[in-house]
Length: 469
Ligand code: 2HG
Ligand code: ZN
Image 1 (tube, rainbow, N blue to C red):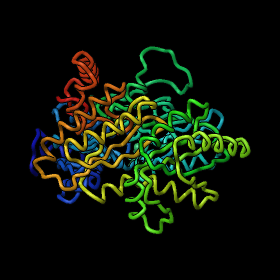
Image 2: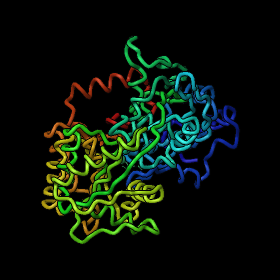
Image 3: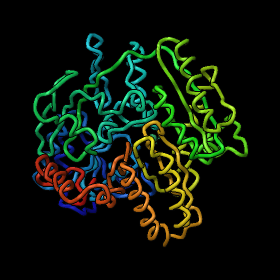
């Protein structure tokens, strides 16, 4: 076994005693498998992969790693887009995949307690059977784990009406880097009791502790939804329509933006797509409303359509059956995959106050022209959250690894100027940390480092993510 760190064969033997032989992997194929997530084309080999089943096992593993100062990288399903689960320092890759049980649905209090490796969509479908709703729905909800969603404070299309992961997390069981196991809060809807450790852990990208149990609040599931796809000749107009919808008093349950290329690429990528894109169309909005009264929803969607018509849109497609709705959502949800399949790309998860979206989009395109890159933009327009996919295309490796970084810095400088920040839902991880100084000053970053130090004085847990070691 090659070791970059202090990890030695005796440690591996100890891990085997804790979790069992078959759950400690050091063969080349396994190490390769866990060397990457969905972030760009990055690979880092761990030295050992461990698959624990309980918080107690993780605690025992962490005690060993903390004493020997072995780097530990926790990993959910590996669907992350900022490199949070990349074991860039070698050491232990802690795969949570076996901790995959939903422990309790509390129908009296509308809460669910779950382990972290439950697939988000499985959790949603399970609570749905009881007419309950867990809204956060990242694009990868069919494969990502709820624990990973907690680490990244994920969002998804429904966030515009229902909020993101942080709005549903009530309490977390956490294994600290030194192996101690704590609960962060209480299973209550209001809590004004001391610092909010729960919310500190949400979005901390696996740097403060390892989440082993999660208590989420649920809401009643809305009975109906209506969906429409609206084409625009001008992408900027599509973005401008977004702010107008909210100003007119509507809150759609989803308001998604897709540039022409995004919808075109995904239509080609997903077989059997029936969506026709007219030649002059440059962008689409996908707009959904939901609630319990269909007549009210019909009025709402008509009202929204009326507002949108003031922005020079084309013919609106009202999805009038479940199959058509499913197709439109499938297309939207698979854009990221389609882009990935099309080209090497870098994904920036920009977010600005909603009304600034048209300025951001124009700015991204202008910067692209100056630096010679093509971008495919799409995302959660209702949240001002624009995924900017920079396509490698004809750029040389030199440009890709060199001057492009200046272009990306310019995009983030614009985002900052517009009152926004680096990431709305994909996190900072490994790939965005070099841009943190655009949106935070030294004092702010020092505070974050100090917090990290209190939880993890030996800096063993996902070190070098969010900010440098
Ligand atoms: C999206 O909006 C997602 O499509 C892409 O943010 C990331 O795979 C994902 O969930
Ligand atoms: Zn997204």
